Image (tube, rainbow over all chains, first blue to last red; front, side):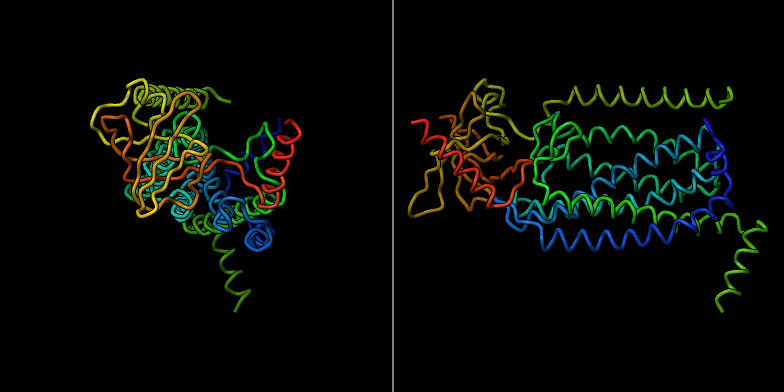
Length: 251
Length: 149
């Protein structure tokens, strides 16, 4: 297997160049897909037979919840790469993805509460799914706080990586909470092995929204990582040339 | 992979397995406390502590809902296929409350084994469909029932 791309990732300069090329495409795709998905889902998808229009919040709730969990898995993978291969870029990715993940978790909890009030009759219930999601939010807060509390960059990177890896056990708990225990939260509508419990005119806009949110994540993460790389590598000669070119290019 | 990296990877894997096992054991020990509600079968078997405010959940039995004309008092039966529990509630039921729907109620069991609820939450399932499809399905079920008679 060819591992050169993986080792190239260790070079911040290479990453800065390649991500600059991807960024406009990812950003454009995110805007188009999110606009298309929200208009389609909020205005044109049919209502639900029981919940009426209030079910439409699914088009925000499900993508944010999916992202909240996949970003955490990403943090854990970055943590492993950072600890095993000592790649500096892994720590940049971990630190910069954590606040995005925290926001997604917060949005998933918020939209869930807004959805819960009209359907269940309560903003918040201490059920296994909701509580595990709240723990995920605190794990994100922990990683952000730990990264900022330790001033030595290498020790902070190690501590955050360990916390991210240990916390990943929460992800299967979130996923299977609705099957292992009696919960108020309903089980998954989408399973890999079965047809979705929802007609195509309802799940198609949802799929567009999920892909749109992933593009949004990629674009925002690349932007944040590029800025962080410039900060950390401020003394490198390629950063100085790059900045000079940018300043002189746009007077 | 060079031996140092391999060793670090094994340490991380061992750490994950250890943490996973610890959390798994803790959760299985707490199994009963994590369940949001007791099922009617558990109540019938006497697994519910006396005089404590509990949550009980199940499906509202078809045709069991009784309203009183002059107050908000309602009475209904919740079942899980095997056992039943009668529930009493005073207040406004959530929009999704209907017969055949899953609910969770908070309250205390009285001497007659009736759950006097002070809060009723509606549970909705993972199935979504447009109203027209739901109507068409109801019609199809009715037609089937009529042709069977």
